[in-house]
Amino acid sequence: MSKTNNSKEEFFTEINHTGDVGVLVKGDTIEKIVLNSIKAIASMYFDREEFQPDTRTTYRSSFKNPEDGLVDLLNFIIMEIDSDSIIYYEATGLTVLGNQLEAELVGFKITDQNIPKRVLKAVTYHEIKVDAKSGYARILFDI
Image 1 (cartoon, rainbow, N blue to C red):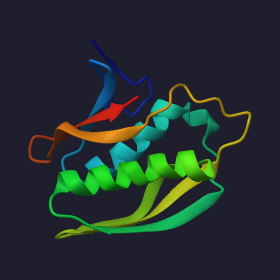
Image 2 (tube, rainbow, N blue to C red):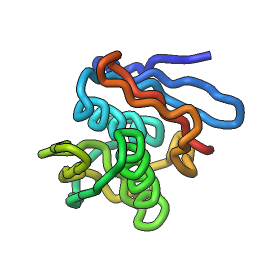
Image 3 (cartoon, rainbow, N blue to C red):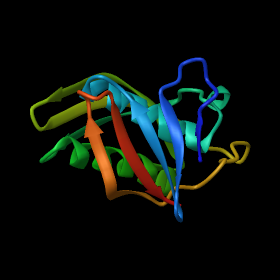
């Protein structure tokens, strides 16, 4: 069973997977897939109306392939939720050159008023696929 998110801009579709949850993220470039993946993970935690930017950080990474780059970035975002109570929900100045990714992540400090819809443990490599030519990425999360 799957469901499309209810925002005006449909940038991902949620998919169920045995014991996990996943998303099919839309994007015809690696950059759009990365941006939409950040939005998707944030939307899985909170409703977009709750997003009030109050923190930023520069994120840089090197990767072997697009799947590694996306897993590293999304696991960084999950780690920040767990360790610093910050959720990043968009990126500005995103560049992907060769095997390098850099972006300024925009987020907010999670307070007691922000009740997550669900908690994600990590992004998995199981069945991950990034295919900009086909216009999507498939990402599974441990819950």
